[in-house]
Amino acid sequence: MSNTIGVFDSGFGGLTVLHELLNSLSTHEGAVARYVFLGDTARLPYGSKSRRTIARYAAESARYLVEQQGADFLVIACNTASALALDAIQESVKVPVLGVITPGAAAARAASKTGDVLVIATDATVQSHAYTAACRAHGLRVIEKACPLLVPLVEEGWTHHPVTAEVIRIYINELLAHADDEGMQPDTLVLGCTHYPLIRGLIEKVVPAGVRVIDSAEATAAEVAQQFFDVKTSAVLKKVEAQLSVAPELAFFATDSVEKFERLGSRFLGHATGPVQLVDLGG
Amino acid sequence: MSNTIGVFDSGFGGLTVLHELLNSLSTHEGAVARYVFLGDTARLPYGSKSRRTIARYAAESARYLVEQQGADFLVIACNTASALALDAIQESVKVPVLGVITPGAAAARAASKTGDVLVIATDATVQSHAYTAACRAHGLRVIEKACPLLVPLVEEGWTHHPVTAEVIRIYINELLAHADDEGMQPDTLVLGCTHYPLIRGLIEKVVPAGVRVIDSAEATAAEVAQQFFDVKTSAVLKKVEAQLSVAPELAFFATDSVEKFERLGSRFLGHATGPVQLVDLGG
Image 1 (cartoon, chains in turn blue, cyan):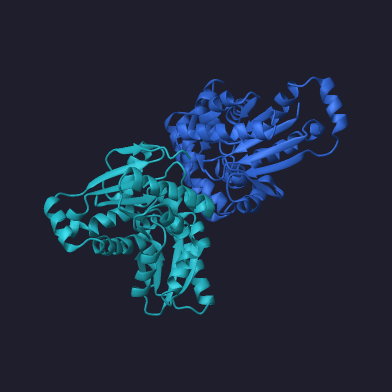
Image 2 (tube, helix red, strand yellow):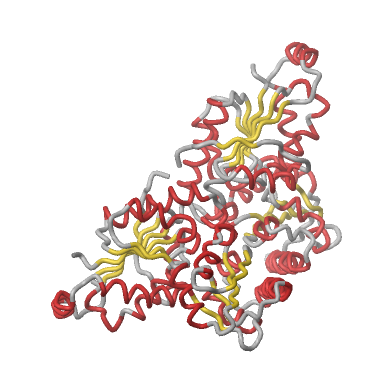
């Protein structure tokens, strides 16, 4: 048992999930020896691509993390890949795989009193209706909206910019009008894209009072903590904790421009990534 | 001689170049039997990727157009690929290859009286400094600016939206301030991205009076008309014209979601594309 958690995203956004993992697993830090993060930056963004293409890219990336980097637990820290390729990834590797959709929907269920939930995400995530399916399985009513300008605005660094605030206002108002047309009383908004936590402040200013904002990254980290430790006996856990009282090792891989990854990654991770290694998946 | 012009882009934007080709070559239409357009949509956007990756993708795409589709002249209707991969493409095929940078720079030279030129483009095009090199070769002074939000705004369909106007105003004002700091008196602005012709109206509203806007797509089409017919003798040309008095055939290929290509492509082409065929380049 290598105690390595593999974290996969098409780009940098999944570093917000890794950030939450580092936070929420810190009480058990001894048990996670190593995090390996792979950003498939040569082929991003997945959000505008087809299910077939996303499934192929994601499965190749997952196999790299398991077969080359020894991951024994995989977190798909990408809403689009979770929505469109979780089955393909689970078929391609033999370790447990957790996406961000199911934990996000479960957190929405825990947060919502009215049972009416809103989701904002990329085009491909919305078109997959994965959040709708996951939320309905919890008895929730849900409306999803694609917000394709938010990722580029975050990547431009306009995370506190009036233009970003205006774009969010337009998207959220369209979403609220749609919910109103459906006779819904939404009290929960799920951030269905790993870039959105960086503009959570602007989003919270626009949503009406009484609507709670749920971050799938946080919800996923909590679920990983649960599942990762469930698969180990406490005897093993105690032994590992005794051996490994230091902070876990972090390793970063990208399929394109490691300089850009190092430069932008710190925004999402909350601190510097350190050196990033280039990987060729042959794509 | 198959009289087939291959047109390549990472996505849909290059359809603005094809649109101009169809316009400017219409007087010689009999000589072009067929246009084959390939959008490498599975791997777009190129604008945020590294030179090595872009060169590999573009060379694969160029070979497909020449070897599989019989193109005997290639137009690289993508500023990023022209800026970063023209050499790699020229090495990978044996037919003439024309990018959009050189014609754009030549058109700026023809338009500018002060000799001071501004260029707006994607990140990767700007970082390549290809426009700077091409403009300097004409004795022009030039400042380039990356405008990464403009492509997503065009793709969101906000081509007449106040948010797009505001983003353009911010970018252009930063560019003008920079030019002023350098003591330049720019009278020409080059649209160094094939998406920008769709927001040319908004851009022309923001630029000061006396600054002329140059579209690389138009300039490239004029140059293709010149080069394509230069390589043929007029005897051959007359014979071909006699044989082919009908409009040229158009064929469209994409490496991802043909539905999306058909849906969005018409915005760039100016009319419906008709059926698009899916191509697997193995990436």
